[in-house]
Image (cartoon, rainbow over all chains, first blue to last red; front, side):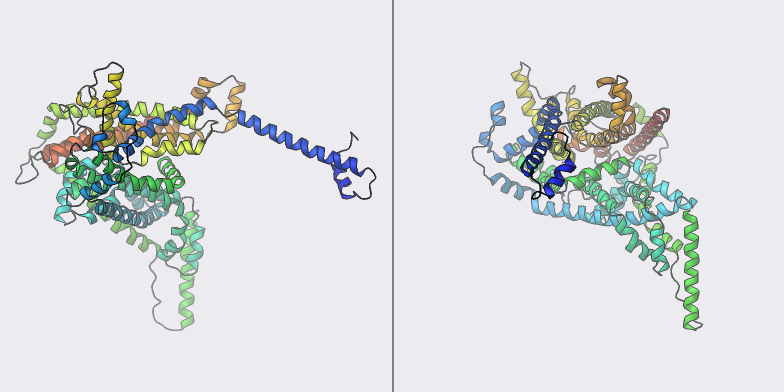
Length: 321
Length: 317
């Protein structure tokens, strides 16, 4: 009984009817199964024991530094001015009624839908143009900079744009854009496309070194033009980089205040800029102001909740490369 | 290798073109296809022109204006290097450089220490790993201006309420020219930590598990394991974070606008804010252009220094 191994057990199972010891064999089979199950359970238990609970608790407590400002924003946005007190209990307490009236008023005061629309147009257009133009230039420079001095020079010329702070471009750009009648959303979009060019071209041309030239050759032999080859072969292959570029460019343009502030100089608002423009109208009504802040934060938070995975990986690959 | 492929590609193309002609039996010239080089030129030239028009040209203009006494309107004269000479004796500009550098330096240190600790925790054997990581990244996606407004309320009302509870005076940090910069530093760090932590985590994930096992055999655990194994291995990520932090903090603007508008007593005017405020509406277009040129040079010098320094460190290892 004791020296019977698994093989035998299985054999036994196959020939149940013929074997006279059939019952004993089956029992043993069950016994073995149980043992395996117990072992697995034990292994799982020891893995659970390895969870570093002190660190987990510490990290959860630390999360309050992130949660508290947001919690407070939501609470104040829902409260009425009469509910505001400066005691700690008053700050942390829930509003008496969950009324949306602050939000309704904030939307009116800051012209919310218009600002949201402007922000969306600027961000989406910038991202679309960036993906189109920057990937093309990244492709050309990625393929040519190793063997052509001219392209290498162009590459470093574009990349060096990363060091140029907006502060030095700001004042001449205000003059230049108003001269060209670009002191509007179109101008802001063009400027963003130029400002994000160094980083995006760097990302694209770096990514391109992973794409073998053989891929393009096949299409080339079939008689496709260089441009068509790029469009049908290279552009789709660069999809992961498009995602990274889109996320980095979108986050940057959506939250930027300085460029629309100086270029459009108050004629049109973006969502963050509206908070600045209407600051005086909020006055001491913090509830109204915070309702407006919450509305301004909501779109990007929703975007983050939906695309969290892509955003995290995009941000990392953008920074590391 | 690439060159060879390209040559063969050109040959193939020529062959194809020849076949084409012979088949049709017409002396007509074959329809010319734009070759690779021409297409590349066609792509590069307009985009580079665009870049020149909206990046290099304003940069050159900025340099040009820095040699004038332009006020932003009307006539102006060339004043040579006077703006630059004035810049070094201007108390307000000096103050803004001091403030910006102190802010950037302290915020960089605080951010990197905290985010490295946070990354080590979030990379450890913990429960709810991905949820925690997700939450800790939230500050980074929020707009700096709105975050500034929210924190401005916290520093004006909530922090004083707490300090009163602990027997303090209950005065807002933002109203004190001694402490306002600390409040701004905290807000800057609050957002930057989210970003740096994610980069450190991705760095920690590149360290293979057996390095720690081998280290443990040699008696490297805890702090010494971190100092001699983990940190040297994630040094490239440390340098990325250092450069990112310094550059972003030196250009701080939104937080200043939202929280202090440069006050109290001009104690929190960052360089960008001063250029914006006095250059755009203060009639100092020329003078602040000189300031911007100096700022640009400073940024380039710091970036190059940081990169060469970290490159050297990495080579040594």
